[in-house]
Image 1 (cartoon, rainbow, N blue to C red):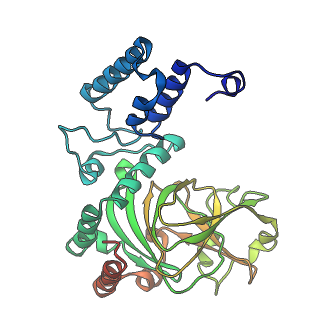
Image 2 (image 1 turned 90 degrees about the vertical axis):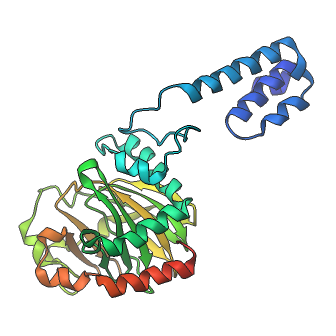
Image 3 (image 1 turned 120 degrees about the vertical axis):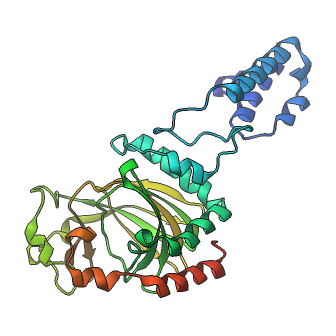
Length: 315
C-alpha cells in the first residue's frame, strides 16, 4: 500500500487494487481477493474482469521470438521442454543485460528439470566431440553438456574438487551460473588498472601456471581490492561479465550449471594472493599439447564424476 494511503486511510477499493497488484506479482494467491470487503463491488468486479481478459489474451497470443529475451512461460498447447528451447536458442552477448536474463532463465529451468539434466550428462558418453572438451583442473572438473557457440551458448556442469584456494580470476567469456549443491563464498574484486590494456600478449603464453608465474606482473595484486562478498547457496543464480575479477571459495561437493558465451578476449588471468603470483589461461587451441593432455578428462574419469553426481542427487 502506498505511504500516503497508509497515513490518511484507504477505501475498500484501494485495498482491493493494492491486493490485486500483489496477486499479479505472485505474492498472494488469488483467493485473497475474495476475503476483502470491496471484492463484490461493481468497480472491483470490473477490475477482475479486465485482469482475467488480459490473462486470456496473454495465453492465446503468438509465442515470443526465440532470439534473446527470457524463456517464455510454457503455453498449454506447446509443451516445449528446456532441451527443445536450447536447440532453438540464440543469445547475443553484446546485449549483456538481455543475455543474462535469458541464460539465467535457462539454467534455472534446467536445474529444476532433473530428467533433462540427467539425459544431457549421460549423452556425453556417446558424443566424442563433447567428451573431448571435458576437463579436470585443480579446483574443479567440468563436463560439457551442450555446445552451440555459433548461437552464443555452451553449457557445462562444474564439480568442485577437494582443493579450495582463494584465487582471484576472470574469464575469456561472460556467463551465467546456478548453484545446484554445496556453495561458496563469492568475492568480486576491483582492480586499479587494466591488465589487457595493450591487447593480445604473445609473451603471456610462457606463463601458464603458478609454477611459472608472469614476472612482469609484479605489483598488480597490490591493486586488487575486494568489492562485494556474498554466500552462494543452492538456488543462487547470477551472471558475470568477462571483465569482472572474482573468486569462489567452495565447500566440498559443490556443483553448478554454467552457461557461457563466446570468447571475448585472448586470455584470462589467475592470481594467487598468498604467493603474490599471476599467470594466464588460454583457449585449448592456443595451449601447448602437454597442457591439453594434462587437463583432458577421458572416459573413465567422466564415468566416475557421473557416478558422483548420481550420489549427490544432482541427476
